[in-house]
Amino acid sequence: MAAQTDASFFVEACLAAGFAAAGVARCAPAERGGTLREWIDADRHGAMRWMERHTDVRIDPRLLLSGGNSIVCVADRLPHPDKSGRDGDLHIAAYARGRDYHKVMKRRLHALCDQWSTLWPDASFRACVDTAPILERSHAERAGLGRVGKNTMLIDPGLGSWMMLGEIITTLEVCETPTLQADPCGSCTKCIDACPTQALEPWSLDANRCIAALTIESREAIPEDLHEGIGMWLFGCDECQRVCPHNAPTVATMGAEANAAYESQHGEIDVVHILDWTPEERVLAIAGTSMTRATLDMWRRNACIVAGGFLSEGRLDSVRPRLREIVCDVDEPEMTRAAAAVALQRGGESVVGWRLGG
View 1 (cartoon, rainbow, N blue to C red):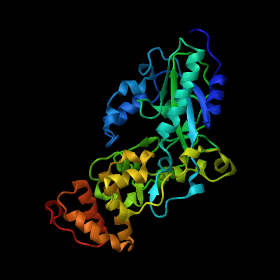
View 2: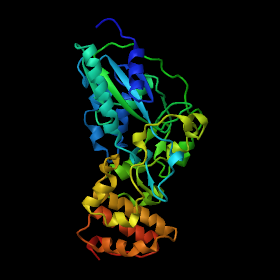
View 3: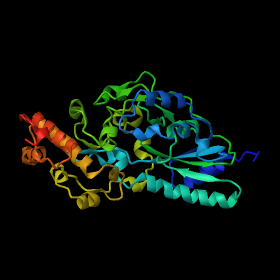
């Protein structure tokens, strides 16, 4: 298809489908492809071992769709956290509080693919939302949706970074939309300074230390030296976004239209209750959200770490008996027993021989 199609048609269709922003980029290898390989070779992807697979596809989206020429990039807007606040003392990443964005976005993207297929029956379209191996932020940046900041998040100057991304790769040749040129960060390092576990460097993240990666992706014990930094984060972490000046509560950021599907879907979550969750109770508590990514054992491990934070502050003494039971139960996963042992130690108790069930 030699003639290029006007991008405005696709942008307007995406906005009409409820997306907060949309743009079009050329389907070409990501500019950060070399950086990705270096990041993986340095083992900075931590527990996300799946990043090692399909690296060539991640770098070159044309391998996802034969004959791909263009990528229509979209963004859904999350409710500004200052509107809903944190869940008491317990923190859950903003993106995970509402309905699972993978399903929320993909449903509309598939509908757009169907519509466009009737207009261009000879063209192919493929919808992607995170689960496909594609460097979303790189392509969204080229499509003009924002610029990647020092915290590695896509930032729309004036609106911030509370966004979820999706794409439609197509064999159509669509005119590109303008790319934003301004660096959103300048000399600012607030995100790096605020990272509780020192996981951030300018434009680079060490997933071995990242709270989000540890609490959501790691299926193993979390190193003891990171427990204090994890603080009250049960699932994910938003600290680098919370301190970003672009996310400050302004008329623009507070007034930006958010997708109602991402409003909090769960009630208050109690740490002590999590430690006694049955598989059925876990499903009921987090059904329909992205929080299902963490297994029951991971939730209980995370809850032990948070309980340790309470104990270190002289609070929640009522959790001590349950933590002692977990430490002494040889049928408990080692990662949960280890977290419970560290929690008790942070609360001033001497825990000896837990690895032997003592």
